[in-house]
Image (tube, rainbow, N blue to C red):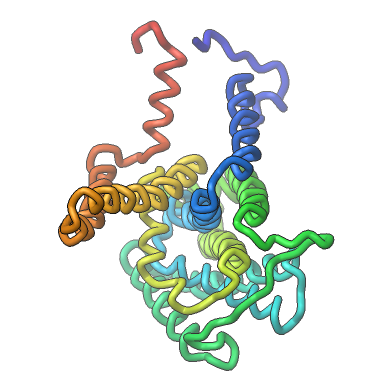
Length: 347
């Protein structure tokens, strides 16, 4: 049970992980993440890489929506911009992956700045419709600008390489994905300890009051769009080296909805909630698919009625979170932690 936590220096008070228990938990988590690729199957490694890439993209969306209050329905389009920019930089400019992936993030960042321009005049549902329009426009560009994007055939890239080491398998890509995920998650957590991050939160809570306090709304909202899009572009670049191909079908509107579901289920305005949501939204459909396949072995006709039920169950779970736990998985995790801090004493 936690009975005291006293700070003796400002550095201790400002630390991200303030207690020995939290630091020990982080060490155990990092150790498990390092051991996982050596004991997991190829299928689990594939899912882990997918979770890591989606988590990076969802972090960007949570910065924009959860922390700044700007709703976006076009986040998958920025992931696509980053993916195409990375593929073009790698195949046509010959850049190595450690330059092509940041280049994809920067191009997506610029695209986010352009799409974010209307955010000073519109917000809420109207801003959501504007970002939805951006999603449709970018999808059209991915499909029809064949001279640059390759059209429906897409672009193929070689595996990423560093100092002669090729990331040519899911196990090797795992270290690349989760290394960047840890770095970007650390950056996002520290962002909201700065003046810029606090300005994001002030704009989310009450934009008029934030402006009266001296916060430049236009610059703050544009910056939120740019940072969010940069994260999306990095995720798109990793997707290219994970899938080795980029096509327009990889970034549909449904993927934008999926990213939105991740931050809602995980918890708006929390870093750990984003990670929880990415795991939940990515793995739960896979678990339901496994249940469907197991039922098919018992009854050959089970697939005909279980296949649509999988989507229904998944949708019902998301609605359940919205109704019964609007703060998401992060709040559930916080309650569990508080229980063990206070046990055996009542709250």
